[in-house]
Amino acid sequence: MKFIIEGSRVFKALGDPKRAMIVDMLSCGELCACMILEKFQISQSTLSHHMKLLCECGLVVGRNEGKWTYYSLSADGIAKTKQFFCDITSGKENCICKEMNPDRCCND
Image 1: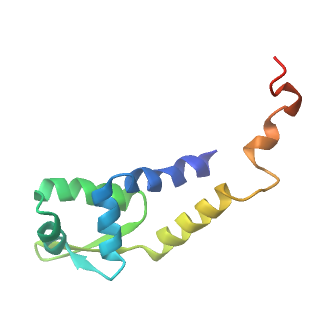
Image 2 (image 1 turned 90 degrees about the vertical axis):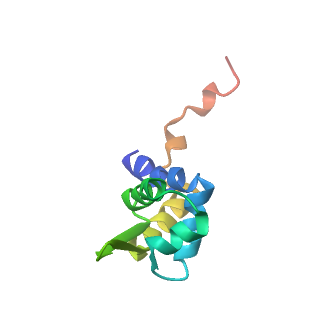
Image 3 (image 1 turned 180 degrees about the vertical axis):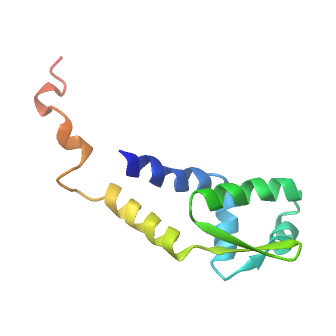
């Protein structure tokens, strides 16, 4: 169940269209926060909030240089997200559905 909670954080973060667009922008390579700000014309505090969520879920990493932060996609975070999605969409022995009692379905 822990892997479900952790993996879901990524999809929660991507549930906001601006954050999904930021990830799309970062797919082309590292970007300075100023470039992201320019594209969305949002406040720096709003961008910081978006980037904090993307970094916390593991999709994005930031590095400071001078007064700016440069962001890029985390290869490890992307790989874990792909694996999580594969895991929850594939049949497996330890699937949570195996814990259910099929005899109870629609027989109440």
